Each structure stands twice: as C-alpha cells, then as structure tokens.
Image 1 (tube, helix red, strand yellow):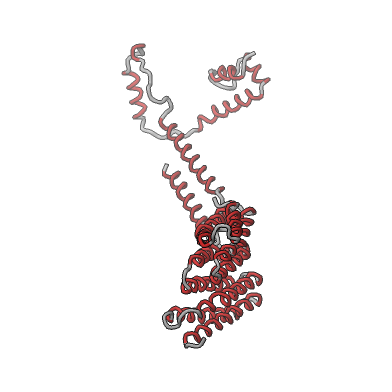
Image 2 (cartoon, one colour):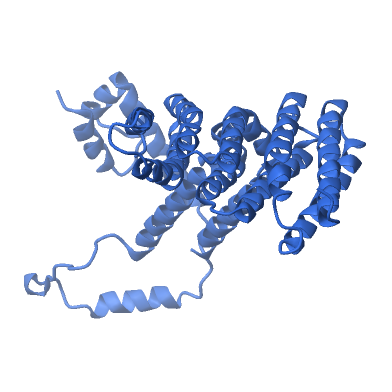
Length: 133
Length: 262
C-alpha cells in the first residue's frame, strides 16, 4: 500500500513543481498591452485632471468630466466582465468622490432658475444613465 | 435448447475437459464461445501441474490430517452461518489496492489535464488584469477634484508627471513609438499647463522644502530619461528626450523661483 501512496505523492509533487516553475508572469508585456488598451482613456483622465487643477469655475469643472464619463461608458459596453468590473469601480469612484461633490457645491451656489442649472441637470442625466453597479 | 451458461455449468462438473459427453459435445462443436471456454479450461488444467509447490517438511500436512481425524463427524447442529465477508481477506486487500490505485490514477490524470500555467498565462494575457496606472491616475484625479490648496494640487500634478515619466522609462524598450509619444505629450501638457504654473504660485519661502524636493525630483527624472534615451530604439528615444528636456526646464524654472526670480 505504501508504494501506491509513494507514487501518488511523487506524482503530485512533480506536477505541482512543474506548474510552479512555469507560472512566471509577464509584467512588462502586460503593461505594454495595458498601456495600448487604455492610452486614450488615460489621456482623457489626464486632461480632465489638468482641468480640475486649473479651473476654478465649478460648472466648468463638473462639465470637464463629460468626456471621461462618455468614454468610460463606451468602453464598458465593449468590454469583458473583468474589465467591466474594473471600469465600473473607477467610474463609481470618479462620480461619487470627484464629480458629485463638485456638482453639489455648484448647485448650492446657484439660485433657482439659473441658466447654469441646465448644464448641471444635463450632467446629472448623464450620471443617471451610467452603469455604476 | 440449453443456454451456454447451463452448458458451462455442466462442463465444470466434469473431471477433465477433453472427455465430453455427446450431449454437451454437440453444443460445443456448434458454439464458438463454448469452444473457447473449453480451450481455456483445458489450458488451465494443463498448467496446474507446472505450478511450483513450496518445499515443506510435511508438518503442516500431518497437522491437517490429524485435525481431520479428530474432528467429530458432520452434524446439522454444528452448522454455523458466517457473519463476516465471504470473500477471503487477501482479496479484500487486493480490492483496496485497486481502489487506491484508481484514485491515484484519477488524481494524476486530473493534475495532468488541469489547465497548464502557460495556458493560464495565455488566458491571463488575453484577459489582462486591472491597470494599476489607470487606477492611480483616477485616484489622483479624485484628489485634484477635492484639493482646496495650490500645495495639494501641486502634489497631485507632480504625482501625475512622475507616473507618466516612470511609465515611459519602464516601457521604453518594448513599447510602440505611438504609445511613447502619447506619454510624452501628456507629460508636456501636465508640466507646462499644470505643474509649473501651479508650483511657481507657491511661496518660495514658506514652501521652500516642497519646491526644493520637486526641483530635485525633476533633475533626477531629466537625467534618467536622457540616459535611457541613448539605450532605446529610435522610436522611444525621441519621446524620452522630450521628457528629459521638459523636466530639465521645469527644474530650472523652480530653481529660479527658489532664488527669488519670477
């Protein structure tokens, strides 16, 4: 009976060692592919970040998110499950921690009927149409 | 007409396989399957004499004969019904060996056919993991949205330029010229439209440490990018030289600000 256990253990150990030796990842290759895949999105986010750094007007700051939201939503529609999960998480963070507080602050400064409310409402409609969950 | 199984039962009652009564022989002649059965039986009978018999001193045989001689004659009252398994113990062990062997074989087969690392790597490469750069840039974007002071904004803008130039340097040897150009272009935008204008707004006296650190960082980035530009393909060297030049200029601008020049 010991022989059988020995064969079993040796076999399993060989297979596991074989797997471990070959399981090296390719971080550079993946990083290159990620950059190629996300470069447009990265460019849009960097441009938006720049607007947030230099723009003082809350309405313009809020509107500067529009290209990011539209692009992310488009990417979401053509992505697999893993990427959808990633993008939804990022989109949610941008909306909840970046855009929404900015819109809220802008809304508080506007009197009812102010023409800029139309711009904020349009942004809100865009947010409502997003797949955040 | 008798069935083969009945015929074989009757055959096995015979003392030897080569003397079949006509009632059975007529069936065997007509039935190929029973012919093979009889041939196999005959081979077994022929092989029995050649089975090696271990040498003994005859003690065991004598004991067995004594036991038979002293055993009382058969009586219906002495019949006992076996409770345990009817299969000899040796056979049970054989079955256990088979079972363990089968399990071991099944596990090995499973391990062999389990998706190999290279298959998994291929699948991983095709799927691609979450992009850490994208995540960091989103984090800095949110921090910029929440930043209330120039100092905070400079911190985040410096983080973005740092990320862009480090990505460009990391991938310079393998990335496409297009991707490198994009990184350099973004670096230029953030540096010229964001970081430098904001950093030069900082008070050189109260924020001296911050400006000094930023200046040193830009000097280091410039040198590293310039050095790497000499080692990479032409498609990557130009964007790296652009980054090096921008970082050098940024460093100079900050140095002037630190020295009190506008």
